[in-house]
Image (tube, rainbow, N blue to C red; front, side, top):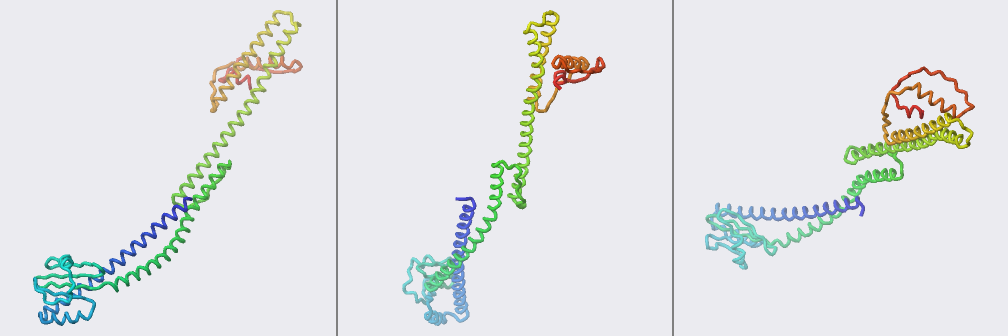
Length: 339
């Protein structure tokens, strides 16, 4: 089940249950409160008539209520002054009889018992609630139909609201899929100022950071590719010198010991230069910040050494130069020579 479906179903069930429960208890409480109030008012009127006219009106009161569905019993201490409740059970009477100065109510088998007790009189009234319960059931049925209709309206409104909320999640999901495909330039549009809007802004910041990192890694990869090509090219120069000097020695054409020693020295220098160059370039490769340990070198001697190697590597090349002696700089001799 999808996230929006879970939210919709959970919210719909909770709202529907709340509507039915609240409506049922409101109807129940409204009926009981109105019945209690009506019965208490009738008892108060009976008290008022007795106090104004005396006990002689009790029979008239009983005859008046005999024509209705209301049963009445008026007693004084243990003496019953009037009663038309011949079927009254003592158990029910004991349950509904309150303390002096109080009024109590009790419902059993669709019968409402209301009893008021004073120092002089005890008035018990019983009302048949069957028609009222039937009317209440009809009202509950009507409420259920109305609630069902309201629930349908709420469900449609709730579904639209949940869809609008989850639409933002879908937008973020689509953007994440684009990043998964390699589109690091994707940007999520403004989704508002709520939590989803804040997340969208953070998402855009994340994609920008990822895009910058991808560019940086691409540049590093390109630089290293260029480095390998430059290193390969740089190694060829000393290798050419080494091969050239060793070929002359191997051919046997060079017999002069001084020349042989000079060639051997140059081979040794070129080999050491290759070693130092490879070590230095590897250090630069590993140190991505490109830090170089600078020392004081004699640039004049370094340049003369380079020109001498070029003259041997390219005999037909005519090199004219003018180099001032004792030029000292802070640099790295191996890197200067490689340059």
